[in-house]
Image 1 (spheres, helix red, strand yellow):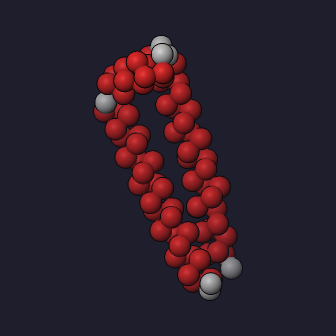
Image 2: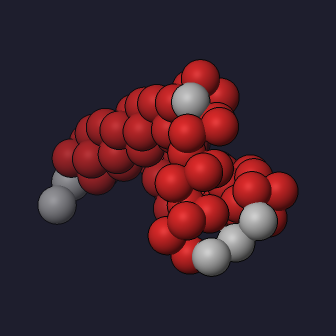
Length: 79
């Protein structure tokens, strides 16, 4: 693989992940009560615990985007 191919791959991977992250965050904000109620019933948690878990998941996902997609793309851009 060439550097251009890898750069394009990680660039599109970053776009895909940021799009999925944005969609998830917007849907959770708009449908918070429904999502919290659904997951509370599914996993037997209190709605407050579900909210904490969702926000923790979003934060972890954002860090993983930076580490696995955006970071390599930025490194390839600097080469």
